[in-house]
Image 1 (cartoon, rainbow, N blue to C red):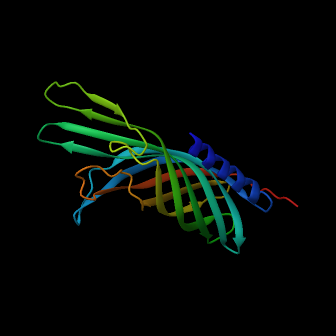
Image 2 (cartoon, rainbow, N blue to C red; image 1 turned 180 degrees about the horizontal axis):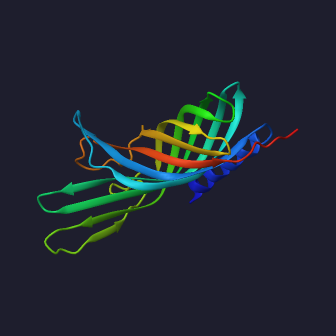
Image 3 (spheres, rainbow, N blue to C red; image 1 turned 30 degrees about the horizontal axis):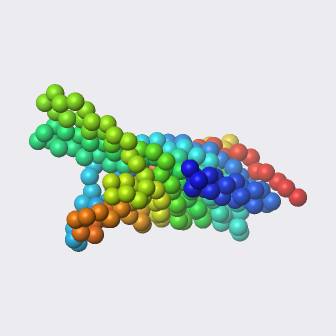
Amino acid sequence: MKSTSIMLMLMILLISQFLSAQTTIGLTGGATFANVKVSQGGISASPKSRTGFTAGLFVDAPLSLGFSFQPALNFVQKGYTIKDEMSSTTEKVSFNYIEVPLNFIYSIKKNEGFFVGAGPSIAYGISGEDKTKYGAGMPDDNQKVKFGSGESEVKPFDFGANALAGYKFKGGFMVSGNYTLGLSKINNPSAGDMGGTIKNRYFGVKIGYVFGKTKHK
């Protein structure tokens, strides 16, 4: 909780700093299609994707003609799905994060049109679930995902690189898509893992609304 509070304070400071110039503030919400990349001994594999939810707010601060800095504070669901057709078993794992992407944006036009951007992101895990449905009449198994430094726990911090593109309409509405590639492993070292790594990745599709410009002298 302490780390989550620090991230919230960081976002508040960023907003306070950029309100000294012309800014736009927006809200977004949409779906995530998440997965993980598992690597071990030079071999990589990925399970099936998991559909989740994301929502948040952002501040867009102009830097120069066409360019702006856009920090955001988002709730993001990540995770993956494993299906075993032989045993009719399905495991769905969800990770809930508070994520702060720090994107640099280029807009073709000032108040409408296409835009693209990229930047680093940092996320902190707040909760999660591991749900397994078995076949042959066996009872389901639901467990909470724990974040920490233990062998069976998930690392709370997740660092990544983010890229996005979208379109702003007249009146304030917008649509966008982003892809975030995890750069840090989320699994803790354990006996016999032979240096294996698990990294998050997800694609997000959002709609949003951008409020009118705020002018300060």
